[in-house]
Structure formats: C-alpha cells, structure tokens
Length: 335
Image 1 (tube, helix red, strand yellow):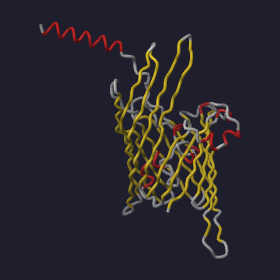
Image 2 (image 1 turned 90 degrees about the vertical axis):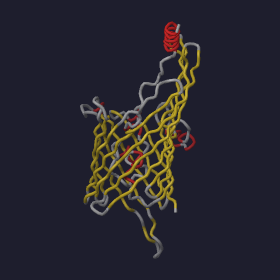
Image 3 (image 1 turned 45 degrees about the vertical axis):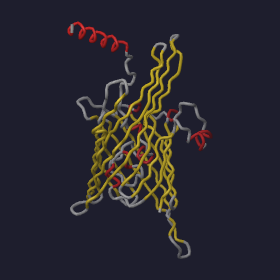
Image 4 (image 1 turned 30 degrees about the horizontal axis):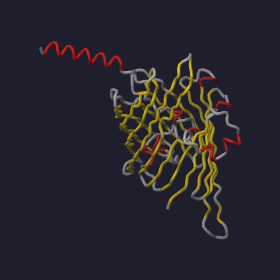
C-alpha cells in the first residue's frame, strides 16, 4: 500500500510543479558600471576602487573609507531620457526627486557608512499581440560599511559591506496575478594600498550572497571583481581599472578616467578660510574599444562650498548625447 501511495504523491508533486509558473527574473547582476550611484565615479569612467575623495566610495570599494575622519549626509538621483524630459524639467528638483529616479542615500561617518538603496524598480504594463503584460519588481538594499586602515608598514585600507535585501515581484501569468516576496543578504570586500603618488585597489562584489523567494528556489547574486590603479598629484587625478565576473564566462569592462580640481578657498580679513573647490572629470569605458558605438563616454563636474557639495555626471554610449543618462548628488558635511 505504501508504494502506490508514494507514487501517487510523487505524480501529484510533479503535476503541481508543472503548473507553477517560471520565475520571470533570470538575472541577479547588479554591480554593473551603469548602475553606479556616484556622479564622481561615473564622471571618471564608471569605476572607482582607488579614489578616497569620492563620498560614495563605500559603494564600489568599502576600503576607501578606512582613513575617513569626516561625516556627511549624501543622496544621489538619476535622470534618464525615458520620459523625453526637457532641460527645464531635468533641472527641476521635484522631477529629479521622483521616487523612480532616486538612487542612493548614505550617512558617512568615521570609517563607516550606513546606506539605503532601491536596487531595482521595474514596472511594465502593456498590451502585446492581444495579451496583457504586467510585471512589477522592486528590490531594496540596506547596507552597513565597516572599514579600517593600517599605516605601520604602508598605508593599507580594508573594508566590508554587509547588505540586507528585501523585495517583491507581482506579475501576470495567464489570468492570474502571482505575488511573491524575497529576502536575502550579500557582502562585498575591498582592499587599498597607497605608495607615494600611486594608489592600488581591489574589490569583490556580492562575494557571499543568497536570496530566498517564498515560492521559488533560493538564488545567489552574480559575483564580480574590480581592480584599479590611480595617480594623484595636487590637482590632477588619473585612474584606470577593469571589472568582470567571477566566473568562467566574463564580460570584462575596461575603465579610464581623469579629474582636475581647483582650490578656490579664500581668507577674508584674517578670518577663517572659506573651503571652496571646483572639479572637472572625463572618462570612458568599454568591453573592447572596438568602435565609437562600443564605448561609453562620461563627463562630470563638482562644486563644494564649506559643508555643501554638488556633483553631476553624464554617461552616454557612442557619443549619442540625446540618449545620455544624468546622475546628480547633493551632500552636506556634519560636525
């Protein structure tokens, strides 16, 4: 009697499994250059594992805040050409702070950072070949960054990101709406080494990760690694690096960037000095630099006045300015 019952339960399980719709998410690859949240990084070619002057540095290399002794509150937001925005609309703060464009919020403290980021906001609702398509996916990240430095031998920095992930997927399967939730965690690690005017860095993203769906198998995020080197003088910064997958198949991107800054601080009537600066950034990245259309060109600028700072960047593929993506950030220093 047990054998027929076992066979019946097995067939029932196979039938139910066959009816279970396939999870429409097939890629969990979020550490891409175009997803970077820092206009400083984007302006300099889309990769930063060496520049400690980037206040969003914990995103790409947590080791970069190992020597940080400042506190700041910063947010970044993105504008794309999806909605055919005019320049006036793009410059409008209300448009820029639209929830679907918000990118990153971080509190930077001494050798640590606390971050919230909406990692994914995808909404599709349309009619295609007589069928209604509906797909709504959201994934949020809360991140803690811890870092330290050691100057007893050479200036070495090391750090780690610990990330908690939570999201929800609602999609239409036939005539039924499928509603599923996901929880998970991930981690990044980074290392920097400074010798004279040169800084070297390495970071591994989503090295250990897991996402648990309510009704689907658990999955891991795509692991990636980035390497970079930087030359720093009083006003000029030059960097280069590469980023790719930690797997047999790779889609490595190569990054080049530069920044030139002007210190415009002044001292009036013997009073305290006004901290004021301006920076201009240029860069590019590509998989192979085989043609103009295969290259992403980047440009950016930044201005700081005492405790306030503003940065922006432009990222476009193949010099198609009308298809550019704009990233802005606002920050304020804390006592």
